[in-house]
Length: 121
Image 1 (tube, rainbow, N blue to C red):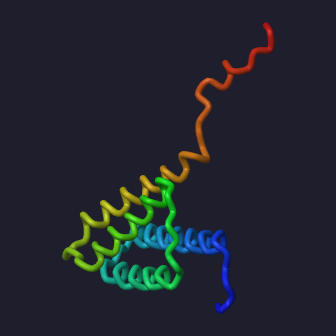
Image 2: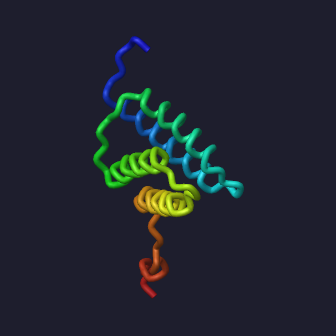
Image 3: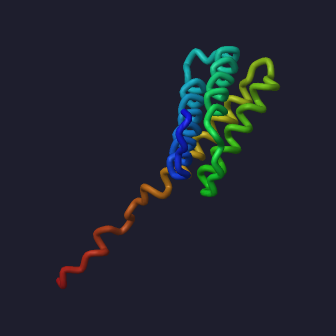
């Protein structure tokens, strides 16, 4: 790719790559027949794909958390424990919190929706 991309395109590309890393990692962690070695191998490959995209600084809480999730994941797979149970639980919890953070801005329940409308009666 020898052509120059503008800043917005680079940012969007980077966002897609880091979110793809997150979704792939979550799906590997949630497998019923979780295999530590397979997880490590695939996560390293996903991390290599992520590193092919130029890093862009993102400042929202969600993306800051996403970057720290990626760093934590890489630290865990570089120094894995024998059973990987604690690491798996920690990563799943962090991933869940990340998804909550992302969805927080798009979904807010209206608790008292019926009280908001006053038709004059």
